[in-house]
Amino acid sequence: MIKFLFKGIVRDKNRSILPIVVITIGVFLTVFMTTWLTGIFTDMIDINANFSTGHVKIMTRAYAEKESQDPNDLALMDVNSIMENLHSEFPEMDWVKRIMFGGLIDLADENGETRAQGPAMGQAVDLFSPNSKEAERMNIANSIVLGSLPAKPGEAIISHEFAERFNLSMGNQVTLFGSTMYGGMTFTNFKVSGTIRFGTAQLDRGAIIIDVTDAQQFLDMEDAAGEILGYIKEGYYDQEIAGKVKTQFNKRYANSTDEYAPTMLELKDQNGLGEYLLLADRMSAIMTFFFILAMSIVLWNTGLLGGLRRYNEFGIRLALGEEKKHIFRTLVYEAMLIGTIGSVIGTALGLAAGFYLQVNGLDFGGSMQGGVSMMMPTVFRSMVSPSAFYIGFIPGLFSMVIGNSLSGIAIYKRKTAQLFKELEV
Image 1 (tube, rainbow, N blue to C red):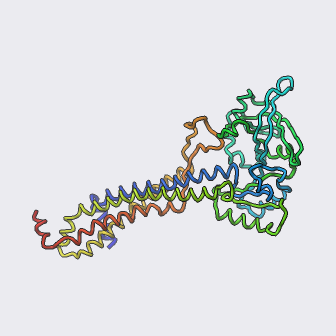
Image 2 (image 1 turned 120 degrees about the horizontal axis):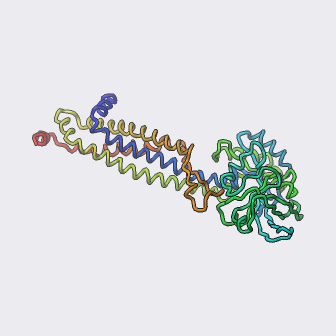
Image 3 (image 1 turned 135 degrees about the vertical axis):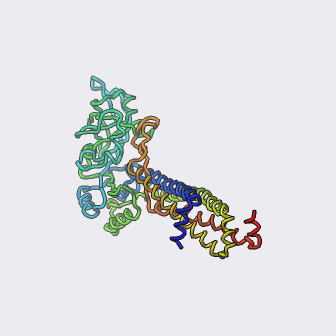
């Protein structure tokens, strides 16, 4: 019967083309919007992961309790040994050291006297290691307004607004004051290699980025770091993978009572991101639901109208002796076949568009007010999730079947005694 119905669909294009085209468009929009919404929410998660939380983060227990204060006096020790163990035990992760610190930037005049000072938030990341992805991960290179990335020890990037306010030029020297890991005062000179726009007012007023080795020397933190961040090498946060890594790592120190013992948190354990992930999932589900509902109504009407237009056809078939239930059954089978064809084509097109934008993205950098910044992605991408492969069949297949089924109810209301009168007309 399927072969017979398929031939009917192919040969009677007036009956099949419009429903298939409408279903294809509806399913395409459903699948594409699902991948786009998933990509937008994923980008928001990635921003937090790249700049602050990692997919997992290792700190001392004492540091974790006061993390908002960046207490480097409670930092991790023997980080080189910890990093070696992490690389061998969890090769699926990319591990990096970071140090957060506060300080004061001092600017000298031609006589060596202080002409201006300003507080600065400092961040030390791995900029010099050959295989380091930190500059790319944090979007540093693309956010530089003037100059370039530090190329050697003793160079730093400062916020562009700070540099403009105090008339700093590339190559100028600034003195950074701070406190060591042990509470002593420290200062050192850095040469400005570039300026950067962070995209947040607090950091743009005063911030500095240096290499982690410079920070270790500056803060007297040899073989120490405030945080070790881990990133899944595939690039996307996966709660299952991160959870397994966290459980396995923390099991090693479960019986330790040392407040300086390392502890690992995953992304959802930090900065209220667990609630955000739950909210993002619900918002994405709600938005997808309403979009599917809207497309379902459209496709429902398509099936309903298609069935009503065949009112005379049903009458003729009844007059020829075909059973009502057989006509109704073939109508439903035909709707399933048309819905499947349109859903397959629409899903394929939606996935193709989703994959394209996942790889290439849409670049909005030129239209952003204030230009490119670290904290705001300029390229927005979609993300093809497993649900995108089947979600289009909900409106494409089921709505078409329901619409045709409702129109098919009219078959049972036809009275054979009236058929010939209708046919004569």
